[in-house]
Length: 476
Ligand code: PHE
Image (cartoon, rainbow, N blue to C red; front, side, top):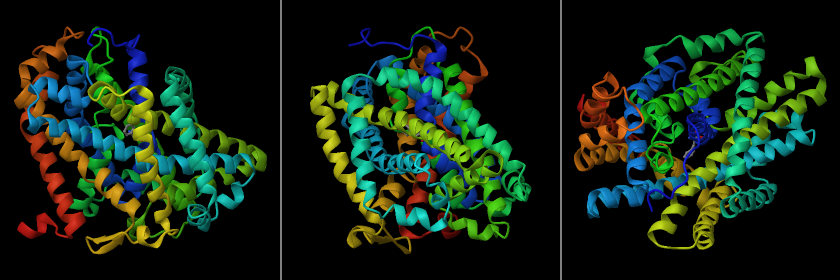
């Protein structure tokens, strides 16, 4: 149905919409946690290098493919390849991945909603207690938030108010960014913050390990919404007047800046509130880190603005992060839903319901796997430890599969779609790209070292995570 798709009205509109999808829990929670646990500055540097040298070319390929085919990922893969089974596997990967990401994303978004409600109702003090988080995730009240959120997401997806939400997000996202900057500035004035800044900005390469490098790549893919069909879908809405490579660079800059400042907020805060923190203990950091330290930061604002002021600030912040997560969540679910509509000819309502029902079951299984249901809590053992159902979903769909999807995209763009077509699409709306450095780099990178690195990272993550074997040591 080429030509009938709506398009983003302006360059800024496209960038903000793509950034609205890209900026989410990955930047605000995932990045600081991974940076804390993987050596701070060393992680930051590897991450930044991956964004520039590996992710950008993949991002450009995905968006170009989307604009060229005007289809969802499954349709894009099958239409370009003439329906070859092998390539359709790539399309399926690009469908199952966002679906499963949506599952664990929902779990985290529920927590944000609950933290917003908690701050509004004056619970900030209790929330800053380190034990609060683990008690809360096992409390039956999460089910209420889960039901509320499921209705909100279902309503947005089904009623076409998505446009309105996206418009709202365009105002709210910059507000979130400003609040993030203010909070960061505040934390940096507190005693001992500088130790955290040093940990975050002065690299200690001794902290680099295969694990860290793998995690940095998966985190970069996740944060930029790569390897999950999102950008193929977004690309299909980009106007032919826009430069894809220019848009991709802007999205990468916005997304990485938000992650950078989230790190500059959380890492120093750890050292402010726990001055005796030993950097070695940070290696076991988890999501609870952010959910514990944010309330502490807000609470310490009370010396300036009183408890009510601090609670107001906290509520606004959690609301904005919740919005960032909601826009991401809606955009992830959009991928399988539009594929069901286009490829299986399901109606919108039927697609939302069938996918929604499957997702709801899986979300429920994740929610009760923090202790409520023992067999889901100790679901599997691999890589030397017992993992819950939630851990399994995160391990597979956040930390492992994205580089594989990226590898498939590179192979597909270069060996099935072919560079000439990619270049042609990149040149649409961009007069300066032909023969430019960007074009030559993208052409070279996508057919050579980028897929090689992605494949290596995928294989070594699988062997490390699931079999406890470090490939570098095994062969080194
Ligand atoms: N990139 C988003 C984040 O960092 C997550 C996301 C994944 C959003 C997939 C949309 C699609 O939180």
